[in-house]
Length: 161
Image 1 (cartoon, one colour):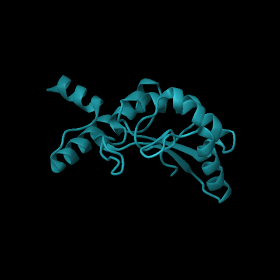
Image 2: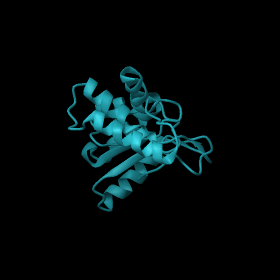
Image 3: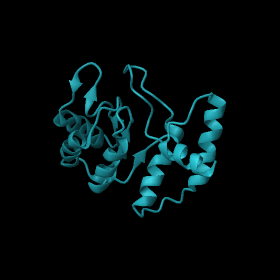
Image 4: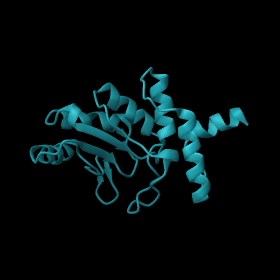
């Protein structure tokens, strides 16, 4: 993982060339997959695209993954531009669980349910049963005594209630 690829809770905005440098070092060391993480969730497509362009100039797209937290509701938009640029691996978490302990206010990862819904809407086959995924998220959230962070799960549960 390369963390804080567009913004850092200490340094602020991160220049794409710094991310490209670190990613290239990892690639040259033999890493088979380098996940680029918007760890605090401040990324927007306008910041993600230049970062990916810089990294993809030195590391092949098939060696890259993306990891977006959804603090400002931009994770799906960032995933979409990443897919359009040739990235094929996306991290997510059921019900948007997770967080960032060193960035005050940062929320969890993008919800897997929301990513799967978007991918299916784009005609991309995932072999994921959205209903079963939502059941898993509901089960976990009940045991953790917290609401789901998935907008898809929330909307579909309202439709079936």
